[in-house]
Structures are given as structure tokens and as C-alpha cells.
Image (cartoon, rainbow, N blue to C red; front, side, top):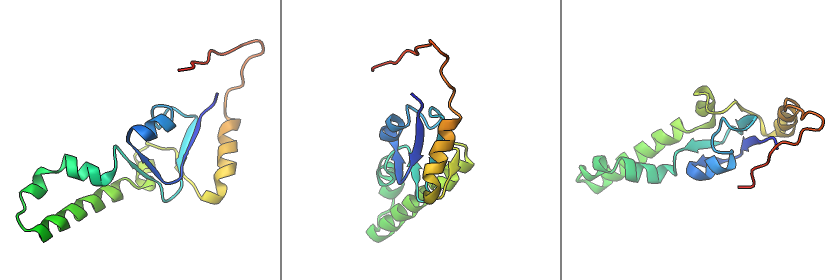
Length: 124
């Protein structure tokens, strides 16, 4: 079965990988709407886990919160669909109104099975 992936909102972590066949490169084509977001995990959690030493070193609670919000904003900017497309993680960022046409165009590029050929389907 051909797989075409269209990210409408958020694509984070293993959930995103499962829905795109294991990678954003696995489907015939992968696109996102302009508001799409990408990341290895939820961004607030990523900052709490991956950057926990930096805020812990800040004694002032208000300054610590500001540093946390600044890092989260940086990751949101990096994870925008346009930036993911620029880094070649996805094929395109498309207008939501053109979604149907984009999906149909991707499926039209799908290889046609040969007559009498029955491809193996892994049920796992």
C-alpha cells in the first residue's frame, strides 16, 4: 500500500514515526500545513530533560522561568514546518486548501503493480 504523510499540526517523537511509517522519508511523499511542528519529543519536555543543568544553575525563580521559556521558544522556531522542509525532513509545506490535490498527485506517482504480481504485505 502506498503511504502518503500529511502533518496537520504536531509531529513529535515515536508517535510521529509510527504514523509516517518509521521515518518522514518512508512515505512516497511527506508534507505539512504551515502550522505544522516537528520535534524528537514534546518541546517543553525536551527542555526539561535535555537542558536541565542550565536552569538548575539559575538561582532566581523568575530568571529561571524566563530562561526556560526562551529555550522552548527557540525549539518551537527550529521545529516549524518551514524549517523542517528547509532541512529536507519533509518534501513540502502546502496550503491546507491544496491538500486533496497534493495527496492525489503523490498517489499518481505511485508505481503500478505488475499484472499477476502479488506484493507481500507484512501484517506486523
